[in-house]
Amino acid sequence: MTATEVLDEDITYFRDIERAFVQRRGDPLFISNADWVYLAKLWKKRIPMRVVLRGITDAFDAHAHSFARKQKIRSLSYCEDQIDAAVDRYRRALHVEGPSRRGLATAIEKFEATLGALPASPQIAQPLLSARRALLDVVTALDSDKAYDADKALTEIEDRLVEAATTALGLTTLKALEEETRAATAAYKSRMPANVYENLIGESVRRKILQHFGVPRILLAEIE
Image (cartoon, rainbow, N blue to C red; front, side, top):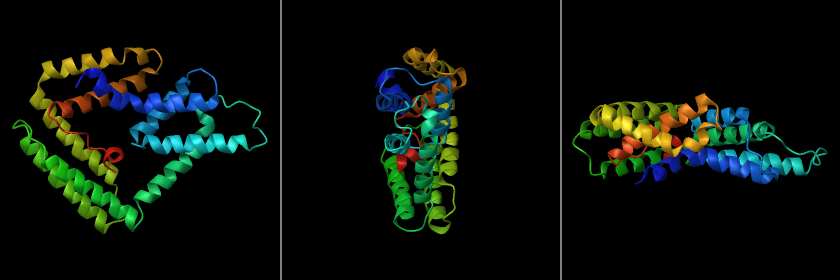
């Protein structure tokens, strides 16, 4: 897999949401620094792209039938209320009893089985086994506590696995992965606020560290 192909899995979130907003807005202007920061907050919270796009669609549809419909929407901030509403619906769906909650537990069980079927590298075999056991603990917790924070638990599992994988890689390979990522994201460096761009680099490198060993990221947005 090339650096660009790996990058797409991270930059697509920002790229596709920006494109969707600009297309609905009807002009070629890019989104603002404030909009990038808002998107970065959603991305950091692991809000799936489809949820954000649903909120944008709802905001534009509502605007089209409002008294202000002749006024052009200039900023993504106009869509925040509808995006927040879509996020709230998404979170409630994940944290209620019944099919949705059971569906999340089932999805994590399937993900754990997927990890178990991977040709584990001896370098991270033990940390990967620990991650799988921790995932099954999450399933148990979901079944017994409807308020259990699965997202936080999955992040902690991934943190431990990334730490082990980073040690196994060594500093030279880690530096090469970061350099590849910065080269592939060069076009966004001047468009994004510095902190948003650096966070993007960090998350992309995390993905590449795991992919070096053939392991996917352990994110709720990708599991469910």
